[in-house]
Length: 92
Image (tube, rainbow, N blue to C red; front, side, top):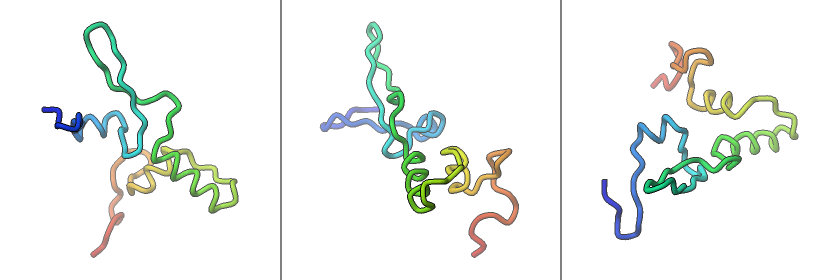
């Protein structure tokens, strides 16, 4: 992996998915001895938080789903297994 002339790197998809680094996720660089670590900013807003906030506003502020429930719903995942149920998704 190389740093671009603008100082950018691409975080591999597997790492983004495992750690929930979605577009808009706030991250920070932490210096530990001679290493630099990347981590989510504690309490930072996520895309899921933005979706929940939008749904709450649209519903009058009384929306009871968690961010994780909303994200699973938007991904079409089964609540228990994290997999698509038969018949879910696009039927085209």
